Image (tube, rainbow, N blue to C red; front, side, top):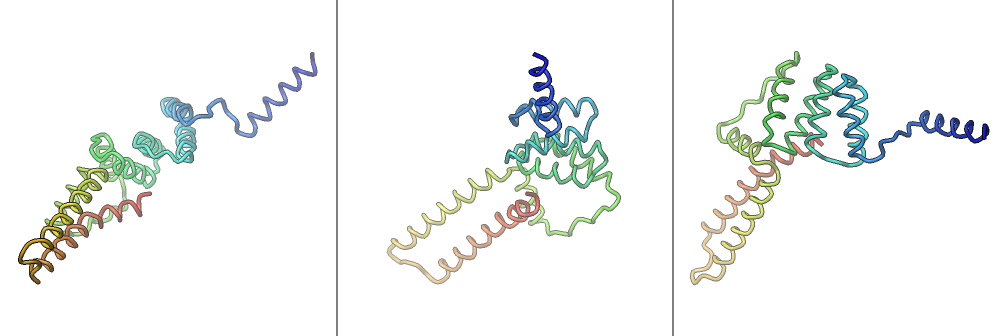
Length: 191
């Protein structure tokens, strides 16, 4: 009996020393992170959230919580990074936007925002408000509209004229460029 108790103690000690915990699912790890955050153990919360992220989970709550934990640790750079990721995943969340602005306001190394035209600023603001999902739907609708116009222009009696063909191409390229450029930059640099 004593041998079995000692063996069990050795096995439990080994598992504890090698990092095995009771939490095995991402949900359990997320809850452990939340509990650590509420107990002001921010480094433990970050570790739990990072472990959840290693499962490949992309969730705005996870990124938001990581941003909060880094903010409380004083790491504004990582806090801003995770708030930006949360904003990309949930662009309409007011809490994410508020915390992102708060973290940005506390930076000492403020970088002046690039000067953009009113049209580009309006397009970016619109893109931020609707999010990537609705942008994808808009691009698909645009593609269908263009395909319909091309088909109609091809079968009509007068056919294509030089002006209508090149005008359509120019409009399509300009709209697609405007829609996808900012989104692509955000995806490449924030993921």
